[in-house]
Structure formats: structure tokens, C-alpha cells
Amino acid sequence: MHVVGSIIARLGSKRLPFKNLLPFAGKPLVGLGIEILRGARLVNEIVVSTESELIARVARDFGATVLRRPEELAGDKVPSVPVFQHILEHFPCDVHVNFNINLPTCEPAVIDRAIELAVEKGEALSVPYAAWAQTAGRLRDYGDPWAVLEKAHKFEDARAGTLDVHTLEELLEVYRARQGPVPGWG
Image (cartoon, rainbow, N blue to C red; front, side, top):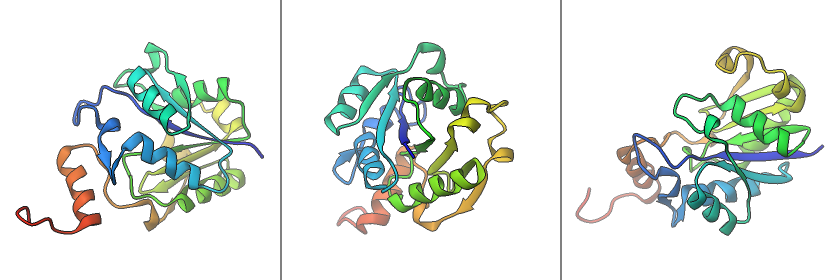
């Protein structure tokens, strides 16, 4: 079974500019995400889909393959499924799994669990939404890309992390949870 692990990372985050390049644990989120995917025992290949040359170059520094995302798939209102289908077109596989780097404390075992459940059920989504896996057949014939919560087998896993980083305050909360207090900042 060939599994492609992906990270979809745009430069144009509205709530937290350059979020995918901001550091956590001494690494840019996209680089940390690549390392987390690499730690999953079932992932064979890692692809970062982006419209940004800067993100592409950082991803290459961390050993990922980069797929340039076309403009029509890089907007704010584009659902993830068409981006996943674009990855599948260029990187054929049996199972695709996407890691949401907004959850930087996720353990690789959550990604493996999503893959195992996708093989069994066609599609699986961790709660919190850190890992989302689909068989190639499911992904090719997905239908409505907004119907994820109705289609995907959801599984709760505390190892996915608890904070979903979309704002500066949320990034600080992840740091606080990991590091504890810093003198002068509470």
C-alpha cells in the first residue's frame, strides 16, 4: 500500500499572516508538520501543496516534495478536497492523508490511525481535525467537497492536540501549554 501524506499550506492566511512559516518548537509550522508526517510509520511520501515559492523552499529544506498549487485552487474559499484531488493526480497512491499543521502538537500515531481507518471505511477524520485520510477511490469520486462531516468516519483522539492555531493568541496558547510560564509574561 502506497500512502501519500500531504500538507496544504498557503501564504495568504488572513487571521495570522505568514502562519505556515511562523515558528513553533524552533521550526516553521510547515517544517514541523513535515517532521510529524515523517514520524508516521504508514506514510511513504510527503508532498506540500502551495502557491508560495517561499513555503515551497522551506518545505524542500525539510525534505518534502513540493507541488505548485494552481491559482484556481489557492483562494480563501476553495475547499480542501479539490486540492487533495490535485495532489492525487500528480502523486498516485492507494491512500492520501492530509496533516493539518494548525495542530502542531499532534502525534504521528494519529496520522497512522486515520490511514488505517480510511483503508477500512474509505475515509477518516480525526477529532480534533489534525489528520484526514481517504482511499484514492473515495477521493477521485468524492462528490460534494463541502460534505466532509457527513461522509468521513470521525474518530476522537486526544493525541491530535487541543489547540488549532489560526491567530497569534492561539499560537501563544500552544507555546504556553508546551513551555509553561516565562518570567515577566505569566
